Amino acid sequence: MNALTLISHPLCPFVQRAAIVLLEKGIQFDRIDVDLSAKPDWFLAVSPTGKVPVLKVRQDNAQDAILFESMVICEYLDETQGGTPMYPIDALARARNRAWIEFASQTQAEAWQFLHARDSATADAKRTAFRERLGKLES
Image (cartoon, rainbow, N blue to C red; front, side, top):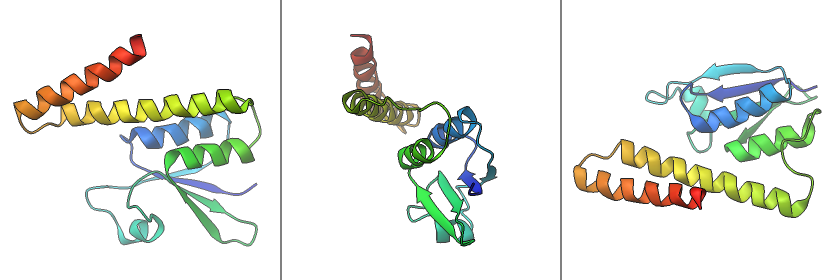
C-alpha cells in the first residue's frame, strides 16, 4: 500500500471531505497542517493552486505523486482503497450524488461570503443568495 500524506488546514471544509473518506475507509495516513496565511515554499512547490487539500501518494518507485482538489482526492481514494464504496455504483445515482456535492460546495461558498462581508449591503445580498440556496434544499 502506498503511504499517504494529507496536507491540510484544520478549518478547511474541503480538507474535511478527504479526511472523512480516509477515516471512514480506515486508511492510515499522515497529516500536515499548513498555515495558509504564510504558505511555506515547500507547500507552494507541491500545490499548483496554493490551496488545500493536497494528497501526497508515495508510489512503488519511492516518488511522490501529488493530487489536489478535494473531490479528485476523494474519488481516487474510493477507487483505489478497499472498504465500502463512498459513492453509488449506478452511474446516474453517482452523477446525482456529485451534483449535490457541488451544490453543497456552492452553498458553503455563499455562507462564507455572507459571514465575511465587509459592508451591510454586501451582507444583505449574500444573505439573500444563501437563503435562496437553502430554500432549494427544503423544497
